Structures are given as C-alpha cells and as structure tokens.
Length: 613
Image 1 (cartoon, rainbow, N blue to C red):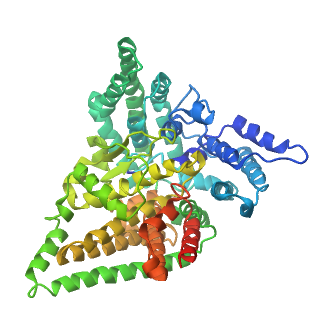
Image 2 (image 1 turned 135 degrees about the horizontal axis):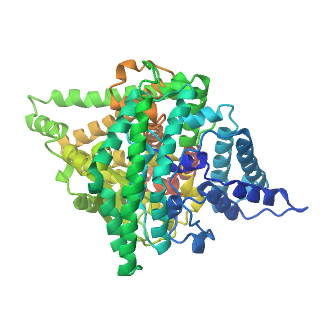
Image 3 (image 1 turned 45 degrees about the horizontal axis):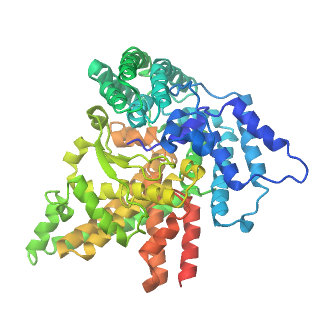
C-alpha cells in the first residue's frame, strides 16, 4: 500500500481553482463593520471543500451525497491528475492570499472561549492553515513540488494510483459512472504529462535515478503486456453490472465505452509513458545521496515541512528527534535481544518452552492458531473490548483481495479504505494481498488488528459515530492515525501474553519489541538518508532504501507515530498506576476524531493524567 497522503498531493497539484480562491477570499475581505464571523463548523467545512476542490475521487471517498450533505455539486468534467508544471509567482501569491483569508477569519475566535466541539475544529483549522502557509510561503516552493511529485516511482506512481482509485470508486448514481468514465478517457493525456515532470526534474537539478525510471518502466510494461486481460476491464464490467440504477441497455452501452476507454486511452497512455521514459535513463550520474540530500537546503526544508505535516508538530528540532528515536531504538533492541537470550537459556532446562517459542519465531506456528481472516476478525471484536469503547453500531465487515498485478508489486499485507462520513451504517471492507498472506501468515492477526479492529476501521467508525467533520477527516494527521493502529498491535500482543503459556507470552513480548525496533529503525534510516545526507550508494539495489528515497518521511507516521503513542500510554500507566484504564484513556485520545496532531495527543494525555490522579 502506498503510504501517501493523497489530499496533500491534490492540494499541491492545483485542485483549488482560481475562481474558488477569489470567491472565498473576496467574501472574507468584504466584511461589514462589527463583523460577526461565520460559525466555526461552517468555516471548517469551507476549508475542507477548498482543499478537496472538484476532485471526484475525494468526494466519492468522503461523501455518498455531497450536495445533500455538504451543499457541494461535483463537476461533470473530471480528469485524472495531470502534471501542470511548477507554479508561477502569481499562482503562489493567490494561494497564499487564500490561506491568509482563512487565517484572518479564524483570528476572530479565541480558543479558551470555545466549547469542546468548536475547540477541536479550531485546533484542526489552525494547524492545517499554518501548515499550508509554511509550504506555499517557502522560498523553495517550486523545488518542493519537484521533490514531492509522485507521478513516477518504482511502484508505478500515479499510474498505479489510478488503478487502485478506479477499483475503489463507488457507483452510487449514474453521475458516478459517467465521472469515472471521463477520468478513464483522460488518462492518456494525463500520463503523457508525466514526461514533462521527468524533464523538469532534469532541468531542476534532481533527475530521477535509473532505479526509479527502470522500475516504473517494468511496471508499465507488465500492464501493457496484459492487454485485454488487464484486470480493470473486469472491474469495470462488474461495477456496471452491480449498478441497480442502470437498465440493461444502458449497462451494455457503458461497458462498451469503458472497454474502449481502457483500451484506447489508458493503455495508449501507459505505452507512451513507457516509451518516453527510456529517454530519462542515465540522467542521474552515480547518485550517492537521496533526492532531498542532493537538493541541499531546499531538501532539508522540505523534509522539515514533511515532518510537520505528518505529525502536526511545529518547529521540531529534528536532530533532537533523531537522537530521541535512536535512544528508544537501542532500548527496544536490547529488550528484544534479552528475550532471545532468556529463551536460549531454557534450551536444556525447559525444552518445551524453547521449542514452542522457536516455532513461533520460525513461523511454523501462529498466535492462537488463527490465519483465517474471518476467524481473526471474530476474535478481535471480542479482544477489542479490553482496549476501546464498544461501538454503538456493529458494521458489517468483509474482505476482498487485491488483483494479482497490484499484489505482485505491493509489500502491503492489507489495507483499509475509509467509508463516506454520511453513510452511517455502511458496510466496511478490508483489502488483502493474497501473495503476501501466503508468505506471512504469522502477521495476519496483527495486520487485521491494525487495518480493522481496533485499528483504522474501528477508529473511523468510532469517529463517525461521534460526529466527526469533513474537515477533521480530510486533514487528519497521519502520525496519529498510523501511530494508533501500530499501538493497537502492541497492546494486542500484551493482552494475548496475559492469558497464554510461557512460550507464547515470551514470543508476544519479543514481537512487541521487534515491532517497535523495526519501525523506529526505519525512521532512523529515513532521516539518515533524506535529512542528514548519509551516503546511500551501497544501498541502491535495496528496494526498501529506494522507497525511502522516493517517499521521504514515509515511515515517520508509522515509526515516530507508534513511538509517541506507545510512550504516551506508558507514561499514563506509570503516573496513574492502578487508576489507569486502557479503555477510557483510548476513548479520550480518539475523541477529537480520526487523527489530531501528536501535539494534541500529548495535551490529551496531560489532561487525562491530571483528571484521574
């Protein structure tokens, strides 16, 4: 699964139209004397709509009925995301003018005067506005947009994103069917513009590395060779056949149009991009540093902004953050190694414990004997009662599988796509990778806990039940949401250990510290190559290092977010002792929505400890 915040990509690729910016900013400027500011929830909705723009995929994901729920009409003219080039000074000024207008409107409010709901909206708005202002006011803005582009990557870039977005796009009305068709028909033109991006990278002094270009071409070649057997044909036909609001004649017409669009436009765009990228092999000469490290001060500034965007922490000293994570990583390594040393010491005295532990370790035995997704989910729904509050509703949760083309290039075992906010009793779906399931059966239980219960899926449904806003959902802080889902894995292991024999308990302890060690180690590697400029030439054939180069700060939400969430829980347990309650503390953390900032999570922890001592 690509660990990318699509909304940031949308906002920085020019989704906000000039007319929208001028219209909203003009309203703010024409305030009468004794101006009465708009309600905060209305201001938050306006900001969310500004960020989402007219993007059909964003609206389809967040709202089933955009007009009825939010008063927004999605345009009939939809396209896939083209590369539009770097921004002009006038465009940048216009964006900054818009964000300043929102900041001015927000300045009419005082946080201490607000009720709980408005305070949450205020914090979310304040963080998001200042975050975007820091991006667009940077003197390195155009360098940012080159370094941060994901149009071309070793995982297929925005071409692979199109396939995933196509698959997860819901047909609720005929307008949805027509919109996705229009987007599909636009792919040839959009994909060709990615060659302009590759060219601008060369002109901007940050050409794509051969590994990236060649891996992208391998993906495109694989897609093109599948021809009429490519899975999107079947996906389109199934979507149309399942659309009960279409009659049989209309379904046949749409299926023919989709077939033509995929064959004549999508595949043509894939071929053009494949052919054109050959001209960009060899442009980067023996790179020893990451893209960001090679960009000097611009690269440092971009990584600092990425860290802020992913964590919500303003002005973090990244050298201190690095030292903090290194110290924690060394502690986790020592603790996992201590478990191994203890188990190895039992080889002669407790051979049954020793042998069973290494059955888990060698993945010939799995925790609780659970590998079937439905059985794991049933177990987790019960186990979650010791971790989080019960949901008011019991959503139907199902599983589906990635297509082989996607599964073959993805290391993700599973992913969860959030359901629209205005579908309160909708079914939920977790997508599994069949290839990875066969390779990693021992990770199934923690992965479904992470993606499903009580991880991402639970947190989203819980937020919807508690009235989360469009704003809070579309600008959620990734380090909180991923940190939460990773923490869930850790507390699940602790809880399994409490009711298990010695071998199982020790394996759970080992796995907990291995997880903490692995993710914090990834953050250290990321910061080393992308921020501190460590020489990566010896790692160029390592796809995991290459992913860090192409997706800087990708592991910050997972590693630093998990470290922070784990540390906050440990602090609350230590300071409260017997007064600590896992369920109520987690209810407090999740009360602000799907993903407040890590700064806010620390404030919630301080308040929880103070109120429960």
